[in-house]
Length: 477
Image (cartoon, rainbow, N blue to C red; front, side, top):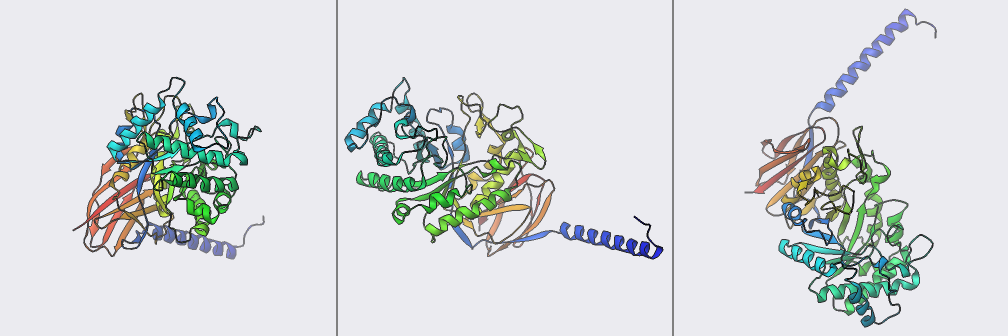
């Protein structure tokens, strides 16, 4: 390139100075405290509470449920019906199916009925409600092409099976509040059920329950693995007829979308909610049914450029043992609440001795240890009012996630900074007369600590270190 003339050199120098000056001004403007306005009277959906998946044979899971004040558990009881050797009855009467369920619930030396009763007794002590799940249907009802797909001719039999299973449990004093008919029915890892067959299954199972007098046991679904993958929500929710929608008591989903983008930010999950909510909105425009997340944590393994081993690996540096993972779980909790979730079920309450995966909030030989995600959630979950409603998200912050929950006596605000830089905000509470700050707890670098915040009138100054969370509780006078 030819050399610049003296005049052109002067012009370039001026442009460089102007550019640097604008950059400095930009840095100054972004460093100014950002004001976030939150209307404490503008509410959205009811938030009924939190829960976790448990296993009926786990004798050591009760403390972690009690410590977090979880209001729901999700579990499966009985055998893996896929492995039951005797072929289940087809086109049978209720009595015949009832006898099949009763005759095979226990077996192979496993005290399944005892385990189920002990688990249910624990939930009664804790005041938690049970969401019942079955992972697999009997093998004989599935396709033999490797896809483990429920064949259409057995949909009515599977509905009858569900009626008999629920009847067996109720007869033994175990009544769930909800049942989830399939675990991730879009996949072939448990039982795949095509959208149109799932619609039939929901309708027929509702009839089975009603005919037995179990009108108060709700069916939730479809319980897909992802909010938005391969148009799954639009397919399974979209295939529900009016009767199918009427037969459901709630919309269930799992949130494992970040398995496809392990280095994605929380914004990735926030975007995935859009199609799920659009699919639900077409079938339930008045949002009369709650959204229930029956499995969530995060599959992310890279946070701000730092990578960890997969949670389900045998690695020594697994993501779930990191503070960054815990912060992400807390932050995703806020994202899910802002997108309409009413019940949020963590996967899972405790590690299991028969699995090397490290999803549990509790771990150790007797579940005596707590993982970082437990400590992050402990600053939020036990503080949620029982009759809480989420606040409408009227703010937009690209770096800090915020959610609010309120009842007539308490306001809980959650803040999460998942970036690698500290963030400072001024929070202005609208319609907040009579609210006084009671407590503020921070989770940062693996530690929970009380923090002192500066308040003035209806404003609050907060500072969030990199990869941290903050929970503030306000009480009425």
